[in-house]
Image 1 (cartoon, helix red, strand yellow):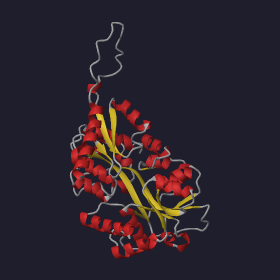
Image 2 (cartoon, helix red, strand yellow):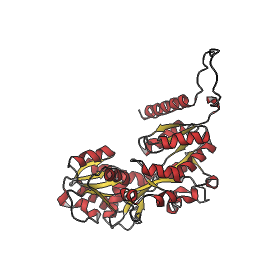
Image 3 (cartoon, one colour):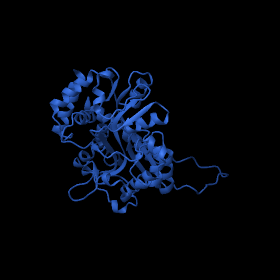
Length: 371
């Protein structure tokens, strides 16, 4: 069954590629009165850049696709994934040689280049690379021991603590609030094994949240289950019960908190004193990319101040990694991203894991949910 699903994904993806890349059928001989405009190059000479990303995540917006196509006289086609594991699977099972660029998260970036799914990036040919946030550029999983860069930081954010200010009027400063009996049955918790365990490790004040005592973590997560109303995995999973008053507190993405803030919802989003889970999405060039030069231009365009500013102003946008764009945000927009007056600093970044660690963490999380 798994082989069938993987094959189906590849067939659908390649079908989309051929639809987007094949030249148009030869038209019938035009009437004598028709005159060619001479303004467009033949479609077969126009390169097609194939982008693998989440649907609706900035790169497929008009302010990205149309602008890039006009700049480089090309077409941009998107293929979408619904999880990071699906993205990796698509690359493994037919994507190499058809996909140009993809968007791994900080917790799968190392895995992607260890498996040979993405190739080194010549950042010396990028105008905007050195304008990107230094700590994200220097993230350990983004380059190898020889200094080869495999990921260009794009959007970043946190999964931190949010709560309904119409219901909760006390000042909350700690992850311990999620475990407080007063919020029994009112907690929403992100259904992601990596975030779940890092958050519990922060609550327990483990010395190294990336290598916590998993027995203690599992016990803490089982205790938290008594308070948890829902395990959420999408915007709607959080927004609907929040609007209905079924949940009043939980861990949530920066982007989700930003959407609620901009909508005027009674939300506060704080960075607990124990620390906060951080993440970043990185653009990468797929191994055997059909258009490596155009792919590099895409990475540079995505890193530019104009695009990053446009993306930040998108209701579904994210915090810029381009420092000019970040520093140029209005105070109101910084407040909407909960980075006013300064971005958070006490971050534990999601990072790649070896297979043994990943399976151990998954086992803990599955045990908690099935208990």
